[in-house]
Length: 338
Ligand code: FAD
Ligand code: EPU
Image (cartoon, rainbow, N blue to C red; front, side, top):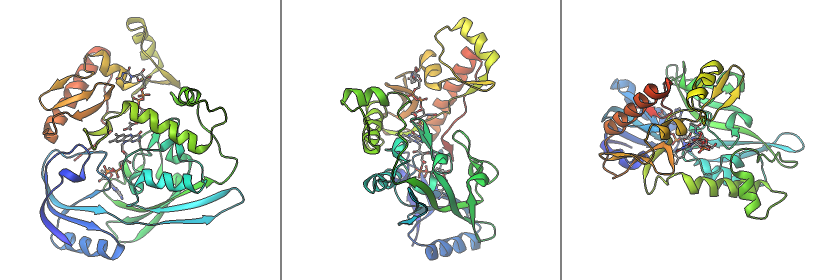
């Protein structure tokens, strides 16, 4: 079950070629316990991977990489009009969304085509097109790596924020998420088409009263039109978070940069990082093996397929410096740097 000196090139969507000292693919809890025992005995550092679509591996990993391949979906009726759907960590996220749509379960359609696995979705509270998983999330079952006990984290305990949760903060490295439960609608679905280009995509298709399947198709079309397919071009989606800055700072910037977009929320204004990066001249720019995507400056790509993780990291540092210099805003990486 445990392999030695394994290339992780096919286990991260950047396609970065680094080695894991030890590697194990896990399909059930018993196997997980066995490899955890092995790691404990040998005092090995652990790295869990789902789909590898939100990591940047900057060097070889001296420890045990565990790919969680736990599979299974179960459904329980909760109340009239709702179901509770539980998926194991290793279920592919998009296939899970498609499963829900094929059963007429609504709530996750705006999150169609996000790469990665279900078990990782609470980590950064994945979001797109006006929804985040926190909108449907009920609880997740985790294994505490220190005590070896399982524990259920409810919505409140997960402390979801924008691309954030307890699992990225004080729970980082402490828990492995084993399964996630969502509360979905079976009728009277809430159709959310206010955000971004969904409405125009539906209008172009001549759809007036969209179903949850129509929304999913529209989201898929929009995503395909501007995000690079990791199968073809290595990337991890948005490399940085969209920064929120104080309203006063935004107003000052607006005097110098009248075009600067901003989305107010309380005392803060969220500014699209893609716009900031583009304004600094980085859109489509290539240095060595790394570039930003021509259609989306927020996405860093492994342009030649030969980039090292360190090269990608250094490229991202140059972007942070440019944006800081021009706008006085510090971009924060969204991708997990390993
Ligand atoms: P991985 O990259 O395998 O892991 C991410 C982190 O979680 C790592 O630190 C890892 O160690 C840890 N981890 C993995 N599994 C577990 C587990 N079971 N328990 C605890 N920790 C674990 N994200 C969005 O939110 N919205 C988007 O619209 C979006 N679009 C994207 C588009 C593209 C083209 C790509 C490549 C990525 C995009 N992402 C987006 C980012 C990514 O898809 C999500 O963050 C996804 O949830 C990552 O899942 P994964 O299984 O690949 O995680
Ligand atoms: N923009 C530019 N130039 C660019 C890119 C963007 O000017 O090169 C500006 C445009 O004004 C555009 C705005 O930025 O209107 C927003 O762009 P977009 O709609 O593409 O969304 P985003 O803010 O760049 C976020 C998420 C995505 C998510 C989409 C759709 C973050 C960090 N990213 O991107 O998530 O899919 O919205 O909801 O919040 C991911 O997390 O990996 C990811 C892809």
